[in-house]
Image: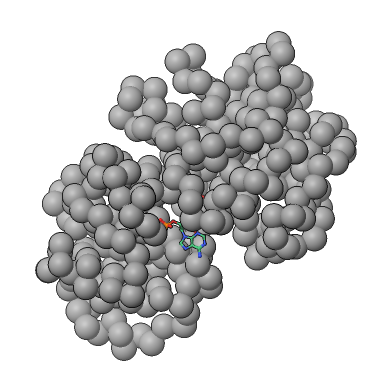
Length: 324
Ligand SMILES: NC(=O)c1ccc[n+]([C@@H]2O[C@H](COP(=O)([O-])OP(=O)(O)OC[C@H]3O[C@@H](n4cnc5c(N)ncnc54)[C@H](OP(=O)(O)O)[C@@H]3O)[C@@H](O)[C@H]2O)c1
C-alpha cells in the first residue's frame, strides 16, 4: 500500500511517500481502505519526535474509510461498512487495521470528510468538557486555540453545557469563529492576555483550558477566580514550565495536566465519547469546520499549515476515493 512515513524526527520535510505492507489480521481486527485521514497536532508531535512513532513510522491516528476485510471472529460489522476512527496509528496510508471496537460506524447522513474530521479532536473535546472538572451553568471558562480543531468543538460543548466561554485566539483573523460558535467574548493572545481576560471577566474564570503550553503557561493561574482550575492539555507552543505550588495559594487554585489515555484510552470509554460526538454531528448540534484538504503525498503541507497558526478547524488528507 502507498503511505507517508517520518523515518526520523524533523520538520514537515521529513514526511516522505513510500510503499509498505500490513501484517495479517489478528483476532478481533478489521482492515479498512482509507478514504480520508484527519490531521491533528498530535501528528506534528510524533513527527518532531516528541511523542514516539511506532516501528511503521506512519503518522496519523484518524480517518474514515470502508471495511475490506475482517477477522473471522468479528461480528459487529459487515464488509463494505463505512467507519471512522481516531486511535489507529498509521492512518496516512491506503489501508489501516486494528481492533474492531476502536472503529465507529458512520451514519448515512454524515459525509466521510466530516466523519474523518470528527473523532480525535471530538473525543478530546468531549472528555475535557465532561470529565476533567465540574462545570456549572453560568461558569466562566477560558478556551485557548478556540478557532482550532479541538478548540472549536470544546467551545461548542461548553456552550451546550451552559458555560460562558471566553475564547483565546492567536490573531484578529480568527476572532469571528468562536463568537459564531457561541463564545461570549474573544481575546487575542498577547503579553496582555491576563488583563484582556480580566477585562471581560473581572471576577476571574472558574476554568481555563490551555492547549498551547509553553513558557507563558503559568500566566493562566492569574486568570482564575477563587477555587478555579487550569487544565493543561497541549504543548503546541512548547513544553510546560515547572510550577511553584505557592502560586496556587492566591485563591485555593488547582492545576491539572491531562492526557487522553486516562479518560478515553480504553475502547468502552472511547466509544462512549465517539458516540456522543457522532450523534451531535448527525443531529446538527455540533458543527465541524473544514480548513483544507490535500492529496496523501502532500501531507507535509498540512503539517506546515497547522504549525503556522493559520489554520482554522480541520485539516484533512485525501487518500483514495471509495471504490466499492
Ligand atoms: N491531551 C489530549 O488528550 C490532547 C488530544 C488532542 C490534542 N491535544 C492538544 O490540543 C491542541 C490542539 O490540537 P489540534 O489538533 O486541535 O490543533 P489546532 O488547535 O487545530 O492547531 C494548533 C493551534 O495551536 C495554537 N498555537 C499556539 N501556539 C502555537 C505554536 N507556537 N505553534 C503552533 N500552534 C500554536 C494555534 O492557535 P492560535 O494561533 O489561535 O493560538 C494553532 O492553530 C494541541 O496542543 C494538541 O497537542 C491534546
